[in-house]
Amino acid sequence: MTFSTSLSRRRAAALLAAAGAAVLAPAAWAQTAWPSKPVRIVVPFAAGGTTDILARAIAPELSKAFGQPFIVDNRAGAGGNVGADIVAKSPADGYTLLMGTVGTHGINRALYEKMPFDPIKDFAPITLVAGVPNVMVMNADKARSMGINNVQDFIRHAKANPGKLNMASSGNGTSIHLAGELFKTMSGTYMVHFPYRGSAPALLDMVAGNMDVMFDNLPSSMAQIKAGKLKALAVTSSQRSSALPDVPTVEEAGGLKGFDASSWFGLLAPAGTPADIVGRIQQEVARSLDTPAIKEKLQAQGAIPSGNTPAEFARLIDAEHKKWAGVVKASGAKVD
Image (cartoon, rainbow, N blue to C red; front, side, top):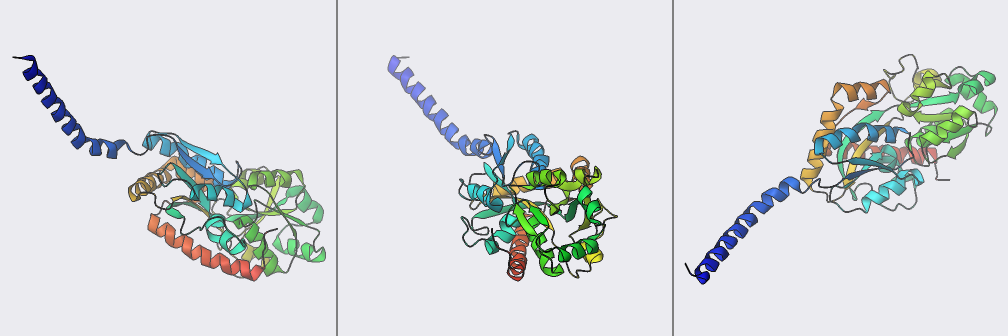
């Protein structure tokens, strides 16, 4: 066999190998394309609040399922708009997700005159993670000193002292803020609003006695309620919470008929994220939320796990935007 013949055969073998690799490459790429590096879940509020709690509950489960770290990244500011905008402007490749809320995707467009993103057009809904009632809480020592034992006591005190009570919230435009605004409108009371950069710092001031009242997401307040540092006057949902069955609703305790100001939290991706990636994340979130450990943990804190489909979540977002636009208009709420 001459050198030229051997070289020709080697070239032919190389060409066949290259052709085979070209055929196999798409299949291999489809299996390894996503995720091939860590995935970031942006939480648009400070650590310690309900949005953060829920993100950190599912992140380890997603890390196990996909074999890559799912990292929680807190980016607080502007009622959640700062973090949401980061995700809206990120590449639609599945590596940047948002733990969105009723604030970022149901309230803010009606509350803010200018929005840096469109909560409908700029996102691909993945799944609702959980629904959460809010809870009306006071600093327990302050409640005792003011003689406030229930919502009717609070309303009487607030009416007798207009503008003298301070109302904390996790930020302008959050469900916590709007629950308070709705309460003020329906009860005919006035409290001075103090927005924080998340529930956790607001709760620190509540426990310290620097704030009087807050309409907080139940999971982030639960520990302080159980410790006796916060007094739960009522839940803001239409029905009592199984996590606090002895605490009445605002409608029951305050006579405010039809009062309902619950919160929700869900995963979203930038618009244009491939449907197969969205579907895979939704399936794993739904699976993890159905495991006894996660389900019991969230329910004990007052959260109601979901894991619904992207289409179902999209319909919820649309309905909630319409609902809260009406609440914002009726309450006259404005960004401070």
